[in-house]
Every structure is written in C-alpha cells, then in structure tokens.
Length: 335
Ligand SMILES: [Zn+2]
Ligand SMILES: [Zn+2]
Image (cartoon, rainbow, N blue to C red; front, side, top):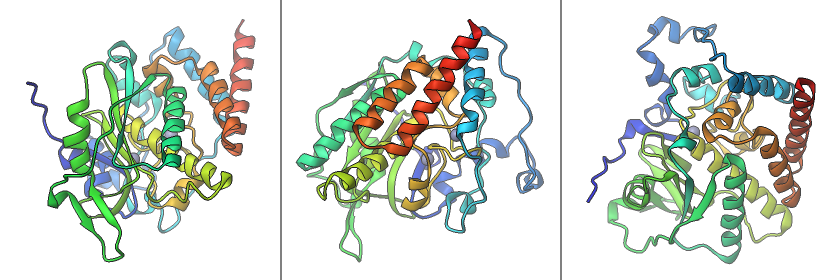
C-alpha cells in the first residue's frame, strides 16, 4: 500500500469568495524568501528579468505569445472587493516558469482524470460531459472519467449547514480522502466535480481548490446559476464551470495566480470578477501550457473556437478565432 502525504494548508490554492491570505498567499510565500519586505510592499516592484532559453521550440512559443498579446488587456487596478485588492501576489512570467521548470509534464503523465462527486441532476451530468470535452481541448490531454464518488457517509467535521440553510462540504475531505487516493502514477491531474457547495478554513465558500504539489483539485457548480433555466443560463453556467475547472487544473499543472493580464489564472474573489475574465490564459500563462502539455498552439485555438461556437461562448470564441488567425500568420511569415 502506498501512503501519500496529506495536503497541508500551505499547499492549497483557491478561487474563492472571501479573502484569507493563509490559503491563497502562495505568491507571497514563494517569493518572500528572495526579496526583502520593503521590496515586497513597493508598488513599483518588478521581478528580476530572467531570459528564456534560446531554443527553436521556445522561440516559436515566444513569437506566438507576442502575436496574440494585442488581443489581451493588461490587468487594470482592482476594484475594492477584487482579489488583488485583498491579496499580495506577484504573478509569474513564462521565463520565470521555465527558470524553475525541470521536465515537461507530457513526458511523464498521459491523462487527466475527472471524478463526479455526489449527486448530479441530468443537466448537471450534461455540464460534466461538456466540461470533460473542454478540459481535453484546453490542455491537450485525454480526459478519463473515473467512477463517481458518493457523499453519503461524510464524517461530521467534513459537513456543515450555514445559518442560511446552505449545506456545505469541506474541500480538504474531498481532496485528501476522495481524490488523492484515486490518483494513479499516469495521471497528470485528478479533478473533482461536484454540485455541493464547498468551504475550507476561514473561507465562507469556495468555487474550487487545488493542491499544486499533489495534482488534485475540486470544483463546485453550486453557485454558478440554474442550469435548468434554459439555453442562455446553461451557457452562462457552462462558462463559469469550465472557467473554474481550467483555473484549478492550471494550478495542478504548476501555474500560480497571474497578475499581468485579464487572465483565467488570476484569482477571483467573487463571481462578477470571475465573469470579467476571458476563459483563456494570457500570453505569459499560455506558453507554459503549450510547452508543458506539448500541445500544438494553432490546433488548440481552432478546437477551442469550435467548442465556443457549439456552446454559445461568443466573446471567448472571438478571441480564439482571432488568436488562431494570428498564429497562422506567424507560421506563414516564417516559412
Ligand atoms: Zn486560484
Ligand atoms: Zn496569465
């Protein structure tokens, strides 16, 4: 029997509702050892420049990132309730990621596994299936659905009922007891999907939570709207769902929160903030996925634009189509 270490609080990263630096202060802890407190609190702070490796593969990814950059907006000053108004984070460039990166994940792992947790209605089952398809196109990994996990016999400390009457499940329980034991050596990530509302520690509720070191994450659709209220509500709910799933899975692939652009890897404090972000990663975060997943950037944009068209994700589809066209132009120029 293999005994795996349990997740510690400091390993957790969250897309969450209420600020609590103990859970989402990953960037602070990561970099605090390298720079002084005075530097950390300096609003003009910039990470030291780090060159990218000068190889044909990396240069191609860098040209692609430069080609799509005009399609993105730089991160604006946060609103008072937004994530970055309440958390100290520095982001991470593609060069910084490569500086700390050792081996491509696609050389070691072959699939993402998705686990339905607890009861799902028929429409939520459809949401789950669409999310599986999206994950496959987004990360370029095959996605396998594992046996559903029940929530029938949770221990008392792993469940609670809030004053509002909302029942909640403790994320730590799902990550440690349901997802981590299912993680096989060939799995790059094990992603839990549930309709139950989540909480952990001081957080009133969570949309999702991930462990970067253990490669497990869990996402909840409980607060994403009524999937049975019609096509438009389904599309809204689907966008929120695939957004949080890609964000949390991105953490399991080693990506911290982004501070450079309006980007899916930015932390979100509330639903309106999350809704403002594109579904796609930005020109600093996206090359990390291209590289570590070994996915072809052009084909990926085309597949995602087709997914968007099928599911009425209009603005995101426009971005993916424009990005595909820009990469095609780079390829033609370089021939
Ligand atoms: Zn996060
Ligand atoms: Zn980003």
